[in-house]
Length: 244
Image 1 (cartoon, rainbow, N blue to C red):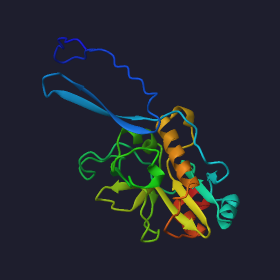
Image 2 (tube, rainbow, N blue to C red):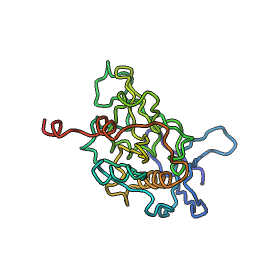
Image 3 (cartoon, one colour):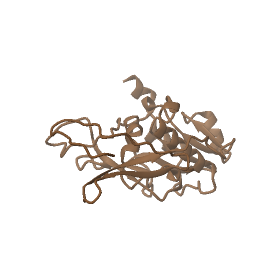
Image 4 (cartoon, rainbow, N blue to C red):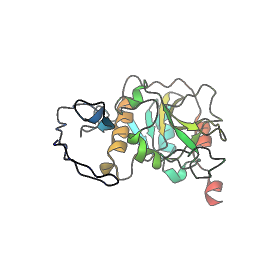
């Protein structure tokens, strides 16, 4: 780009960057860097590229469900695989926000109750959704359309795939993504909205693809065992709660 004078205190268009991304065949985290040659002056931005491909290898291996109803219970009893994407208003929990607490919730009261995410980056469920240990901008839409799940009453060994980093005022074990084994069946639960307007929500669509591919694969083998009633108790609102 040509050198230009930029007046202090205002915005100035420097030019336009066009990059062909067709050579990127798999979901990738990339970095855009803008620098001034011959100096140490530079700025960079994290970006994510998701090829527009269909979820492959799913077939009839995986049932995508929104409720733990009789159909889901039957599938689990027969050794089925389920990706559970509950409607947000049916989940027992609080609405999450990508924006973390500012400084300290004791001093500056806000509706934000958490400090971001703790992601198991080595877990196969996230293989198609590049992420660091912490949340970044690719989680923005996903977190803003999610409800936390309190795992206090889950088995002690339950380690979420994507866990909420709690504020010290409320140090509970909360999750957005976790898995368990129910009898012969396997269950993957995501408490983010990965269904609504999915064609226009690139990151949410990519996370959904990643979860479905994982659930259909050989590595989907949860270690923690739970009963259907246990999962329902920690996850879903009761009829009484809905009417209260």
